[in-house]
Image 1 (cartoon, rainbow, N blue to C red):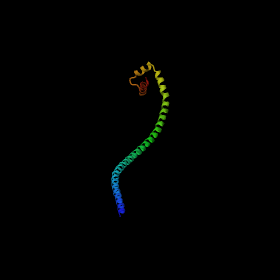
Image 2: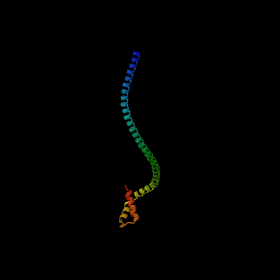
Image 3: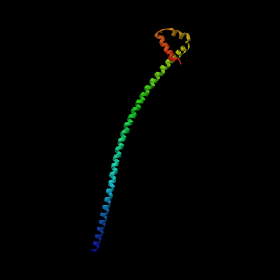
Image 4: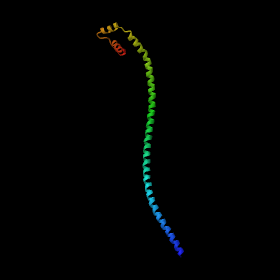
Length: 136
């Protein structure tokens, strides 16, 4: 009986120790669970923030893509207009050079004749205005 009593006492001591350890571990578990819950909330907030930023970035990327397409279309139009303007300039340059040469051929007598007119005809007035513009 003593032997059984000793074994029973040893078993009870181990059960008491196990109960104390379970109580300590339960406290640690509660503390760690609180930390885990807090971190889980932070992670949820972080995930929500990441999702919002991802949506914003996706929207900006789409806007940038649309802007790039529009810029490409505008670039084609600008190139065409530039080519047209260059062509018009090349067509106008000979006339400009011819007008500049004609301006150099004017002498004082021609200017005096125009000054002598009380009211020059409209084509003469237009030519005189062109001469004023072309003269350096």
